[in-house]
Image: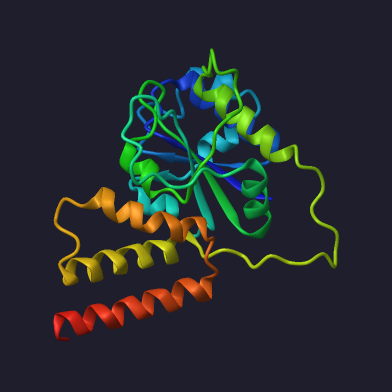
Length: 235
């Protein structure tokens, strides 16, 4: 399986180090999006305990687009309590995430300790994952959430046997981003979407995410929307 853990704006050096240790234990990569602490901090290195190399080599990213690049699915893990849930991507099962990680590269995205991922970041993900905690106390710290998620992915057993029916690999995050942008441009050109209709766009795009389009399907839809958009704009 090909899995990376994305930590967005992590504040605690201890959490950073503990998450790196969990990543190394399960063979996952580590990505740091705008970290708020230094990976060289003595607490980060102490909590990493054997995974200092991951801290040293983890790519530092400055945008969500960088995190999406080259992925087959970027999946958000973040609490939705008190949020506007309109336009959120579909919930994935752990079995679906495991299958995607066998077919391509999956990124599990975690937000900062206090606030989690922003609603916009969750909306841009290919899907959402939830750790099956007890309903009355759904509380894990960041490092525990990372370790639990990687364990749930690893718990699926061996890969499908050779000769089993192959499910086509889904379109990658960059292909889906181009499709989303083309959908937005075409609907704007038609007058259906206004300047502040991002949530509506994401609601319209959600069925396409749930469909797990193949690269060819995403390419065809993008091309069709571009042609329609050009016609609407008189190009």
